Amino acid sequence: RPRSRGTFANFGFETRTVRGRVVDHEGKPVVGALVAFAERIGYSGECFDENFDKTDEMGRFLVEGDLERTRVVVRRSATAIWNVNLKPEQEFVAITWPKPATCHITVDPSLCNPNDDLTITTTRYCAGMSVIRVKARIDADRRATVANLIPGDYFIAANKSITIGDADETTPVEIGHFSIEPGEEKRVSCVQGGQRRVVGKIPKAGVRMRLRVERQKLRYEDWTRCVGFVACAEDGSFRTRPLEPGRYLLRFVGPAPANRGGFRGFGFPAGPVTVKHRLDIPNDDVPIELTVGGKQQGTSAFVHQTLDREASGLWSNADIQISELLAHPDRKGVSEELLRITNDPLAPYSWRRPALRALGGMTDSPKVIDALLEKLKSVPRSDTKAKARVIRAFAGCKHSSRKIVESIAEYRNDENLRVRWATYDTLARLVHVDPDNRERIIGWLVEMLSDPWDRIRADVAATLGRLAANQSVPALRKARNDPVGKVRVWSAWAIARITHERRQAVELMTERLLGVSLAGK
Image 1 (cartoon, rainbow, N blue to C red):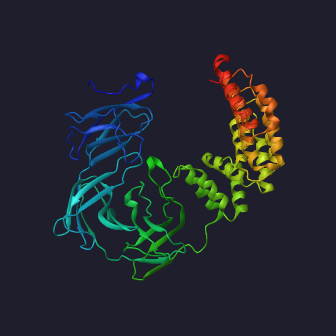
Image 2 (tube, rainbow, N blue to C red):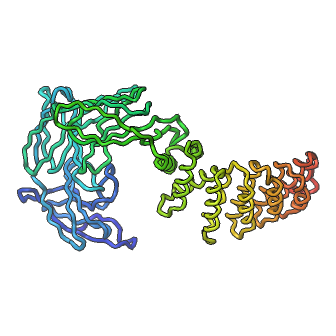
Image 3 (tube, rainbow, N blue to C red):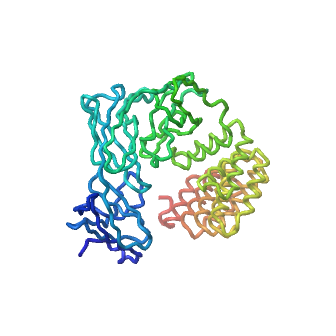
């Protein structure tokens, strides 16, 4: 039969074609169902491949996709989805649609009100499949009936008003769960009996607590895992709502910072998890009192959280994280952990760059200086990007060190452009924080006026003018005859800045750019 299929073969992809037939539990063909290969995308997206097919009057279908697809999805409606796994070389599949099940739900009056909506959610499928959500309205007797359910595990949620900070927000909260088999008619009761409040205290004030159900069969990071937020008082005490017996994961999250120009101008919460705690709520009537966080956060955990926050892009200004690392009271512990991260090839790549920048601000320690210089020498000659990154780490140096300046200056004549540019930029920054080596750095900058790259020559000329380096005037006069216009202009401007001859500088700059006839006009 002719089918509307994609053009995988036109682009040279290896494809597989699967034929099959879909019948219901009575053996009758299922007509009009959508069949396709499952996409490998997140749970919140569409699970169907764009090259889908509809079953005909006999329940037959034919789908085509790339060779790596191993699962066929059949969808009769938004709340009726079934999937079948395929073998690598399977070309025909016979799919039997399971017999629908029915669930009668009775809800305790303390959990919800009449005419409220219940959300029945399944996480039966593996990653890449859509989550099925079914809505049900509660009648005056606090009852709801859900029909035509696919067999699997379901969770029942009701809309609850939860206090987050000073505001009340309505969010779905899990009130029960059940498992159902094909064709089963099940009755489920959601009661509040056996629930317990958790009363406790945390030594850090100004935080809020997030409760999550720790359940292995939940495979999605969805609201079904979160059972609410609890704001801690000023003294660190907290009191949760009544919770069902089971195991919970408590996370205490720090307060959100002010808006620092994040994504689209919105401020993002800081997100550092200060305390984690697992809590088991028994079935007995014993009250639960909890004191969390008896010991302070370790230095290694602080460094990891700070670097991870920068890598995740929660704040647009990376200098904030660097300043936090430098302001930590345990500078020795922070520097040791940063050195371990920079030398660990298995550490996240997004952590190494800020770690190097932070180490550049800790050069008051001889151990840090020796470690950075050793790393600079150990970088392979071909890895110019890594070498330039280590050189730029010294740009944040706040201490005078002749050893650092002399080690960096060796790369001012490197054959690679990136390394020379990093060397110039770092020396131009160190000249302001290292007065003992100012004359030596200016002498090296004067030598770089003859660099092969015109941008370095122009920037060096401008930097020498800002530094008002009198010993650089002869070299700047020579640079006024440079073949590149911007080098000539910046050299003339630097001479005027040093000698205070502004009118002559204007004439020199216009003459170099426009010619003798328009000089000074």
